[in-house]
Image (cartoon, rainbow, N blue to C red; front, side):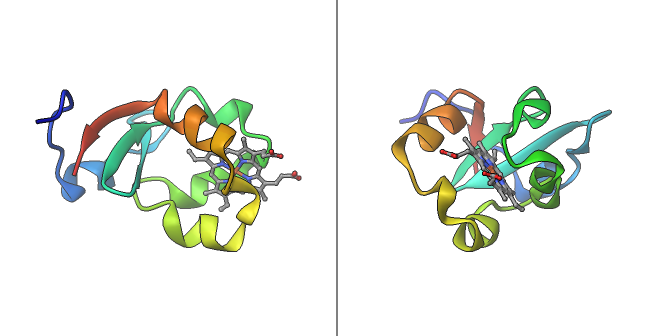
Length: 81
Ligand code: HEM
């Protein structure tokens, strides 16, 4: 069992602006990255993934394929799909 609530893909999709929060998914996890967006080393590109999956973008930008990046992401987890 998980300590995190189950969140629908549909709900994730509604969180793609600073006003409503920026949520993304990765490997079944849901992350509220609103507070991270301004700190992202890759700048505003991060907003391309808003409301959807990180996988297609991280496949293109392999700089994310590092343990320290996943640790960072894990701090923003709010639920599971
Ligand atoms: C770089 C985190 C989403 C594009 C980085 C770095 C971190 C990071 C930690 C620096 C890595 C290093 O140099 O060791 C994240 C997190 C994301 C996210 C936590 C999602 C929650 C995205 C997305 C894109 C993207 C969706 C593209 C659409 C880039 C690019 C760089 C970068 C281009 C390289 C910047 C440079 O070195 O000039 N990201 N990223 N990132 N990210 Fe992201």
